[in-house]
Image 1 (cartoon, helix red, strand yellow):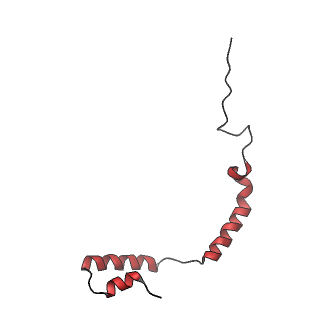
Image 2 (cartoon, one colour):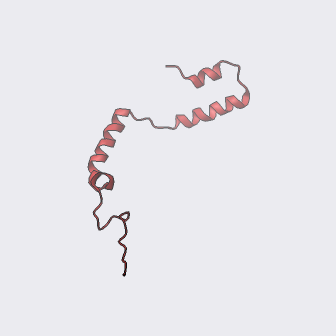
Image 3 (spheres, one colour):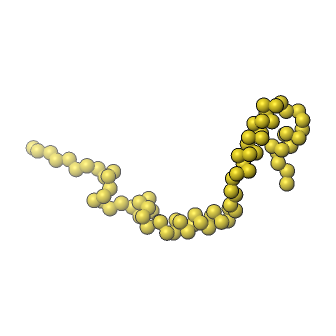
Length: 77
């Protein structure tokens, strides 16, 4: 597996500030916890199934609790 960032540093044609920037980025990435896409997809699906009944986009709003319904206008003749 080849790292493009590491290849940039190894090439030797980079300046000191550029190398420092690369080192900062590599240190930041070293602390990241990677999770497989299949695990994230499974967790996301489980979350959606558990919380879907509370999502107004999926279930809609009742007319009494819908803040976006047209306001009734009272008019006197």
